[in-house]
Image (cartoon, rainbow, N blue to C red):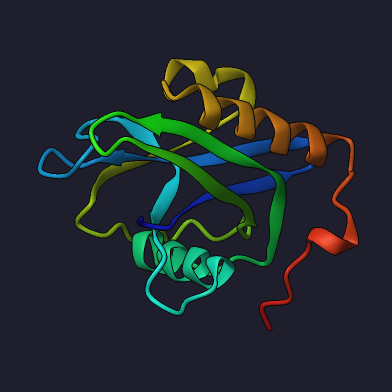
Length: 151
């Protein structure tokens, strides 16, 4: 069974939190859908390291803070008869760095606030996780145990 990860890049400007969403290219799975960073875990790779690798591959920027979201993206995929339990990670990006360089899997990107997410993201679990991350950030409730030291 394939192991997957989700990464939710965000930036904070004062009290405003914005999430980076990526538009899938026409030649890839989930064509034309807005999504967060996601990908597969390679053999013998830790989930969190796969998340950092996928983030770098997909947008070419490293986060200034990286943490585990205390929840999973869960869904059933009928084509493979698989129940997926996908760890989610949040990646704070430098609000002054907008040098995003997309890989060939994506055709565009957009910064969006959590209260606008339903207009773009159609997967309920991804919407839920974005709103959860926004709530954690807004209330300044990131626990030290969730933070991953990436230095």
